[in-house]
Length: 553
Image 1: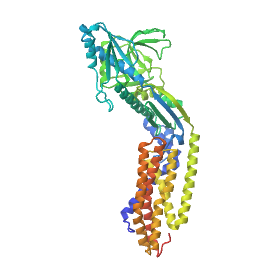
Image 2 (image 1 turned 90 degrees about the horizontal axis):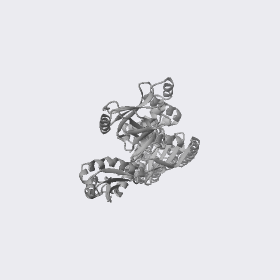
Image 3 (image 1 turned 135 degrees about the vertical axis):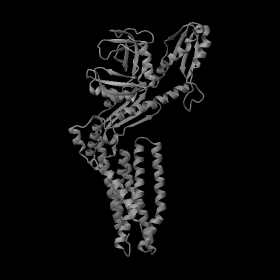
Image 4 (image 1 turned 60 degrees about the horizontal axis):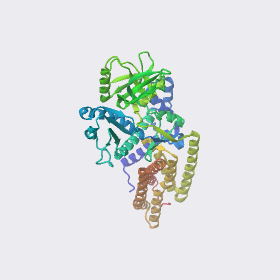
């Protein structure tokens, strides 16, 4: 037991050194953060003298990972948004209309003419002129139904088709509505996460709450309004055929048409066909750039499907205007001079560089499938976070000092060795948090404080076993050996069960509970490592040098 080979000693000290090396940057938080931000800006926008100076604030060869501070420590913005999932039903009906029209066109001899009728937004109503052909029409439309892709919708189809006199009524089935709601929330989560990540914020919390709500917490951002500006836009890019141009926004656009204002021309409105030819969902990429006049613009590139649609439409409508619409505003309405089959294009307007960059970010991240309605918003100032950090420091110092004094008074030299291991243990916790990029929250600080109290448990078990062996007449070497050997099972049992609890909290919990479980779980790992390996190695080194005839524990 007291013979630890050289390679094991090297590995133990190397792991300790590695953990401490990753923990050190947190002692120089502002400098390292300044360095990291400058390095990221240099990669994105190129080097400047100011950025180079900021990057030199921390050595390039040294680890620069930091423990991210959560919203309650750093300050930031908190939003609770409700996704208007019903908006998607209307979009689904609009997208289904061309398929229904094409399916019925081949049977005009039986069903007569086809015309879409106005109705509720979540319904598609189609009038046929020959009511006697209704059974055949219903058969054709029902053939368009697809199986519902969800565990709860097995065996169901996505649409329900009914006839009422000479009108075909198409609606989404209940199973498809449930599946659509779930897909809409998941898509919204992913798009919000992309948009927030694009601007480089650290460790945002973006998660689903209930059936239709999304919780968004972003540390380090200035205000809730700033966060809403970033994610509150749908950034829905669509391309519509132009019906007419008018100077009266109150003009009746007519059935299946919409009227949108021009973004660049004051007092100008465009009447457009409601169903777009191509949508932003078929974009592969969008990047800020400059037009032929050197003005900021945004270039975009379609996927294969979008490029094909764009090519077909522009080829069939040469000489006609074509509107580019962003969030219900016409950015531009150029005339089609020739078929555009390259799959790419450019959006120009009265942009500055910041606006073109933000627009590219939003388009690249994708369009939100539905509007967000904010039901709760808060801005947490950094001074509140600093108060939490200060309170956490005080609690940690008091707990730390209490444990150190207790161990030194109770176990003498062995207690001092345990205290050194405890200090290393805390350093290793921060090293691991930095390595994995974890976020430290106020409950996370509570987990560290709890770990400080629990970290000496293993040492107490070992030292008490050594005391018992000494009282039983064992020699120093044998007492130390048996102390570690007999205490090992109790140490592992206690820490494994606590680790399982932390794991369950992480899996089942969210937000603050997860923050607590992360630091608790990592603290258990480092506590076991320092108790079983580090303190034993220090005691062995001391024993090899002093060779005491008796032990006082």
